[in-house]
Image (cartoon, rainbow, N blue to C red; front, top):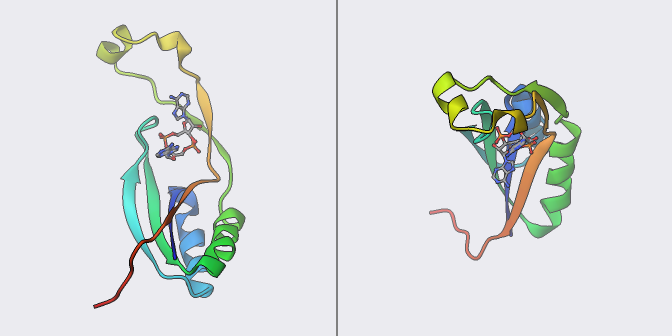
Length: 109
Ligand code: 2BA
C-alpha cells in the first residue's frame, strides 16, 4: 500500500476531489498554506493499493493546471531584512506537488 500526499492549488481542489471520488478513491482533505506564497492550498492524503497508485496520480495530473501567481509584496520590516531583488515577481505554481510513501501498516478499527 502507498500513501500519496498531494499538494493541490485551491482552484483545482474541487475538480480533483470530485474526480477522485468518482474513481472510487478514499482521501482526507487538509487546508494548508504554502510556505513561500503564504497562500491557501489543499493537501490530500490518499491511501491506495499499489496497483491503484498510477491511476490516482493520473486523476490528479488531469485535474490540476499550472498557473502564474504573483508573489505578494513583503511588508517594509521584512523587506529591510531581505535581499528583495532576488524575489521573483511571479512564480509558476503547480499543477500539483505529489509525494509517495510506503505504508508499513494499515487497518480500519
Ligand atoms: P508555496 O510554498 O507557496 O510555493 C508556491 C510556488 O512558489 C512554488 O510552486 C514555486 O514555484 C515557488 N517557490 C517556492 N519556493 C520558492 C523559493 N524559495 N524561491 C522561488 N520560488 C519559490 P510549486 O513548486 O508548484 O509548489 C506549490 C506548493 O506545494 C508550495 O506552495 C508548497 O505548499 C508545496 N510544496 C512545494 N514543494 C514542496 C516540498 N518540497 N515540500 C513540501 N511542500 C512543498
